[in-house]
Image (cartoon, rainbow, N blue to C red; front, side, top):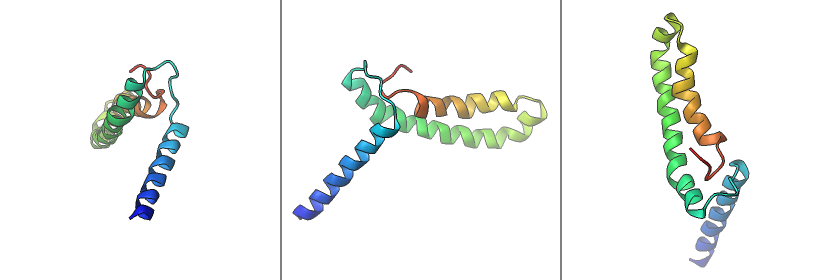
Length: 93
């Protein structure tokens, strides 16, 4: 039992360490905003990126025909992607 608990805690600590290595942190941010960003906003951003990508692919024939594919990809895919992966952890939205 103790070995299993130790294994899970070690895995959780390594996973948390990797998150902080990959995502930049806004050093002036409050701890509550960092935790809220990590637990709530980042998963929502990942879902928004996936849904936006699907919507973009579905609308691609129409948007390509009328020349708005680049603008549509910016709004449906790139903005949620930047919100999720390029913004500092706990940074402004």
